[in-house]
Image (tube, rainbow, N blue to C red):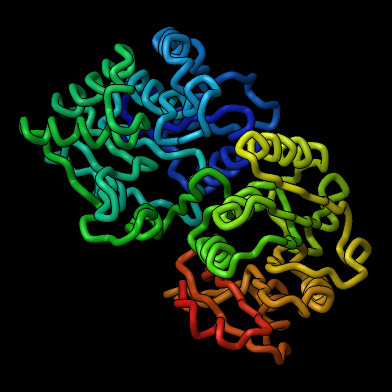
Length: 449
């Protein structure tokens, strides 16, 4: 490690996480961060992927070499959010999932000669250059810890946390957190994830003089990362890129509010959003039907270019396996998840009108494709189209050729509305949603997201 380095970033991922989001995080770090800022990326329970992004300032380390972490997982195996498979999964009672973050941070802190350690979740993407001046303004020498406090719940969001490694108090905090895990104290708390434990230790250490700077002291809601100054350069996707972006809250709320049981989605991608939408539907029913369309394994570079796709591709088998697993989990709870996946271009696979309670169009983004998908599905009561592009604060917006949804929206004569969000486009602009409905009253019953 460069001894003159002022900042070291830390993240961690496993094989699934790498495929779903970490690869994009690493690629964007390589593209937008200064070369004198280092990233230590800790991988676990897998080999280092062959297509891993390489750069002089990215260091890969195997977390399975950390014996404390291995011992912790062995000793706490039962406390995996299901109590060994005896109850429905509860992420708040999963003492295993987030331990990797803690061991990665503390292991680096013990070895690093950098002045600041910054944790960044692997489901975070950098969308423009991060100036050194911005980091220097955040990481002032009189501060021990930086964090994202929340008013809507009693613990911070820990997708971003900063530690002043020149501070004895920050070092002691990290060692206390490591000790909490080593001793298995995690399950003595009300909730067992790292965010809850971080907040409890933070309050204790602040009572003894630790100086913590809350970057979001008055921000409303749970997603404080994307409402903070960090959002000028970074976006946090909470687990799956594009699945938990702030605009998708609308989808899940709408499905729940209007009791949609049958869902059609063009652009199934990795299946994560299908699961999230089904979860919203299961709040009011025991049977959910999902119909998904995607290129899956038939995708290629030529089609990506034509449809303006930048996402990683997944095979049909991968998504079937994921949805089968989800269906089995729901069956244990007395619920039924039924799905059908169609592989190929929707201009070939979606040739007949399909009925559903809720439709989400997010497949190909050329004008020709979104127009075809909409024409086949416009008779349904609730339709949402992704990627309606708006200008950002700097007046930037994707070029017209990328704005197929915008062009289609102008032609639609049904009741419609644009929902503005804060979700940025990497090249400039903001992503909105276009709502089209057979029920005009819906446009007035739903607040802009």
